[in-house]
Length: 176
Ligand SMILES: Cc1cc2nc3c(=O)[nH]c(=O)nc-3n(C[C@H](O)[C@H](O)[C@H](O)COP(=O)(O)O)c2cc1C
Image 1 (tube, helix red, strand yellow):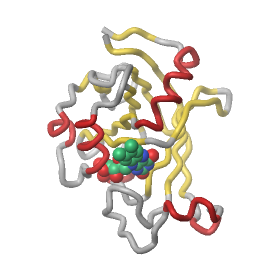
Image 2 (cartoon, protein in one colour; image 1 turned 180 degrees about the vertical axis):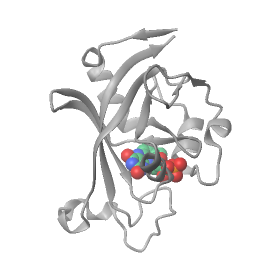
Image 3 (cartoon, rainbow, N blue to C red; image 1 turned 120 degrees about the vertical axis):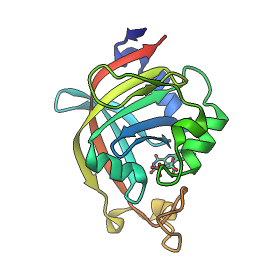
């Protein structure tokens, strides 16, 4: 069962959970789930939005190019270390992360990408806008996040800039 929620009532909880690692799920070639620690909810064009930042070489980026929809799955308490390890340190290019992390997929309501029962607070999002950031425009204080001697295939920080995605939140609920 899905309990519909008003995202703004969960704003504090969502914003506190993000830096600890939440899941961003995609489905194009296959289902994939990656951990994100940067992003947030907000308002743009008078719409509720979720903004995230995905390095350009991530498998997730290629998935979003093919199907520009994603779900964000947020734990109600602490993140699960096994899920963080599998979804945050391996790539969907080589790993079936749903299976490895033991994720239980839940059918979506509006979009084509499932949510995850283990992280029940769910936002269904459709990409409205995307923009690749420009290394030359980053301020000095953030350049250490872009080590130019580390290749794109590295699951942690690497040479790649981020692509910013602004997704419209088209549905929000807690999987019970
Ligand atoms: C706590 C944590 C937060 C992360 N946040 C981000 C993020 O905001 N953006 C990003 O591109 N990668 C982030 N990563 C790294 C990706 O989760 C990781 O590279 C993942 O393997 C990508 O999966 P994919 O290749 O299937 O797309 C984070 C990893 C962890 C452990």
